[in-house]
Length: 207
Image 1 (tube, helix red, strand yellow):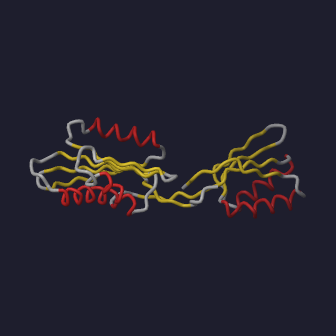
Image 2 (cartoon, one colour):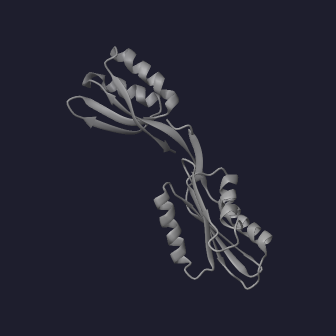
Image 3 (cartoon, rainbow, N blue to C red):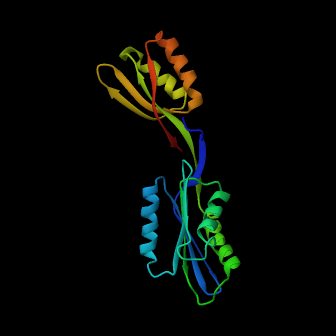
């Protein structure tokens, strides 16, 4: 089971723009949940702003997967500062790309780093956020005469994503919070005299 049971991520995409000494900075914040989606979304931004001077980025994914790039800017002035902004908000499964159109005036290493952080910070600060919580995915096997009892107890234990399977014996696949597992199992065992089986078959983060 994952050691993290709750995390914050973006609800949807967001954009923030500002100018600093003629240079235009465009921050894009994008919710992503895999490396592949992060790289795909990054490529979308690169194509959209194909004529930009730089497309610097950072992403932080579940499982301590992070990556960043200065994309030609002085080392440490862009990608790492963007990642710092993501970490400031404790966001996971988040990609931020800051695009720069050079305005003809060099900013200097210090101000340049501040500009990238400012763009990333503000696009994240103005983004809608949501929390996702860990749920166990469980499989419940039972006899047909226990159907109403099973539905009663899974409902009072706040399960989600109920999927009914009708075979020789009915089965239910659903999601339940880890702390509700033991009460549910005890309730089902008691009402069925231990004829109902409950098996954890996976886990996922849900709203």
